[in-house]
Length: 161
Image 1 (cartoon, rainbow, N blue to C red):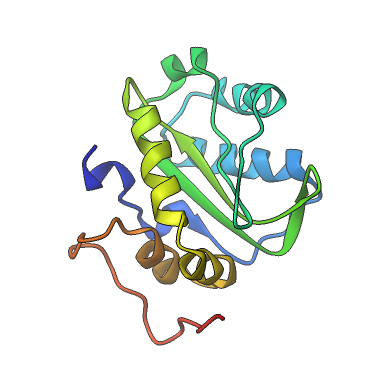
Image 2: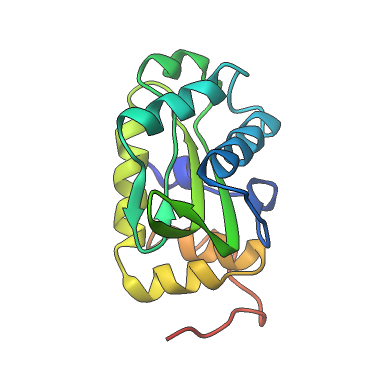
């Protein structure tokens, strides 16, 4: 998988959000993917269907909701939608602060999931992501290692411990 598959733009990142519950957070991620013109409207219900069959919490306060295998036909292009919920969202008993909605076309779906899991496997990076309050910070933290063309965070990046 190329780094381009994970390239984020500021339009794909929302920080400082609130969600009533897990379903609301999934709806927000799906609506952002729709706004980014990455998916057809039918993809949103498929994200909820996937969550019912295979929970998408991956640890470190991060969930990665995405559609079912059948819903790949509703993906216009591979894209990520990153939403940060500073107050957290109850995700079946887990405190989720970051929701990364995924739309992946063709066979890139598993590659996108694998690359995200690798990026988030560093606890310090995941903690910084949970505390991020601007798009530049989120983009820098999710940049694949060695991707020097991606934006870097500005002075607003907070140190986390």
